[in-house]
Length: 227
Length: 315
Image (cartoon, rainbow over all chains, first blue to last red; front, side):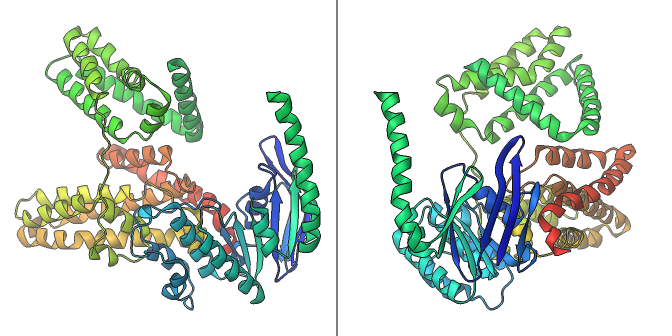
């Protein structure tokens, strides 16, 4: 279980996360949703340890969470120039990981230099590296961005299987349907706080009402601006 | 528009200066004064004034070819060439003043005219990457070398072969080793994504030790044939290539510490590049050699501290 208690985080004077409490159960897929700038990526960075927290604790099975137990997929993966896909993957230690077998799912030219990859191919490579790390917690920030439908389906199946094998997965996406199909729990982040956490079925009912409210607000503003 | 852009440039420069720190600014200011004084002296007589003008123009050409904001300027400014021209004139302005003080008006005007030609050059040198079997011999963990050996492949092979084939000339091997040493130092220019850093699963000091070992071993392997061929022809001068190798091994240690002192994922630090340049120059001026050792010592702790943020879980 991941327990986040009273988490506070700022960028300079701007408070991004304020007194956030969240519990994430083991062997579950958890979606974190929220509007742009609601603090989703900051929260994930804090869990992974890429952003120093001002106060609060993040624990995994009662102990301070460390990078040793987390593999993290960032929204826009960046790669060192002039190395091949195979060379990148070989940096991550996991002797039981059969790269070629896994690549049958993703069809990447692993002996080619990464700079020659398309955006989608780079994303697939980043996903492969996360899978190779094989850590108990997987954090995936917008994993479906820039990927074709087939690859999205493959990743979805892989994640569901990984959950069955005991992984705890935290995932963000702005495509709500993807999350409602995949996640066991959905946590809605607003103004740096968890507004609510709901199980998948509960969220589906709540979703329409929530987004209808947001849409109404926007519609009002558009009318004001454009007449 | 132009004034706004120049304003942004000054702000960018100000931010970079803040990153460098007060002590290093003082050192750099001292160096800058020395350079200005040197240029002022060179501008006082011919032909040195002409040579200095040519050297500065060549630097501007390199800057123009390497600058990464050309697409941005072309999209956002109709008169982007005018922007280049103003920027380059500002950069060369002190030297233009020196030339005018010494009444070399025609040289100053020629320089301004040359700047006008340089801004018309509208190309970018794309380094071709060579993905050959040779790079596969380099271990994957030494990704800086893998990457560098691809981007500078032709240059490395040419320098190495020239050094080896002309090793019967006494200067051939030392010069080749020095060029290869400088090229290999540049491999450390770019910061890797933090995922690659964390992938080593090592504490900062062990990570730094591993990096240094990789750098020194690979440089020694590349230089070994050159060194041996030098010994065949000039065995009485055995200490020269050994000394050069030793100097560049020390510089590899220094460069590794500098890189990770200023490490930020996915970027190259101007401060680190500047300090690397200071390190290389210091070895050419014997009085400044202790400075490299002092800075190496200083940056070891800074690198450890900086890496601790990413690798603190691996203690």
